[in-house]
Length: 172
Image (tube, rainbow, N blue to C red; front, side):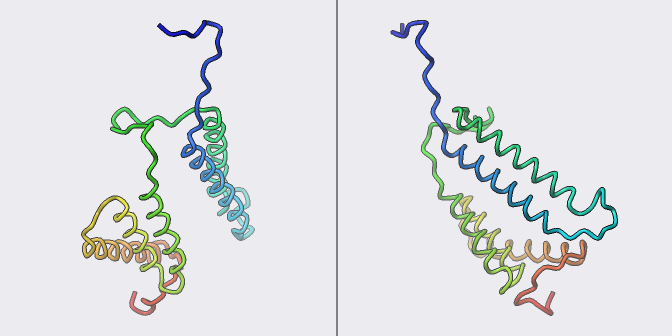
């Protein structure tokens, strides 16, 4: 039996700071995508549905979802794991894997232009595999490079995109 009277206020829910950070990150990404969309040149043809439409839809959706998540997180609502997940939402947060992935992404973005898309993207794939616990470094490097080369070829030849070739200029 508890000592709470029926008229005592309910205990205030704690704010989940990881949920707040995810909501802020999503909101910032949505705003950055919106700003970047404004820099897309329009040819003047197809003014109703041009190259800005889908990025605008995605940016508005991301920003709206981020704001809604932020409001929920600040009200004490928590993102609960799915029933099939075996996680403890009250366990301390370990950000090591997320930091490794973020670091790989940032370094990959920095070397993208001087070394090329293949090496920058391969580093990102490698960091994700490492963050998820893979330690067969030779296999990780080989698979990362192969997937990056295939991605480069699909984007440049299949979609006609211009990606920085870097050190592999003339080879791919």
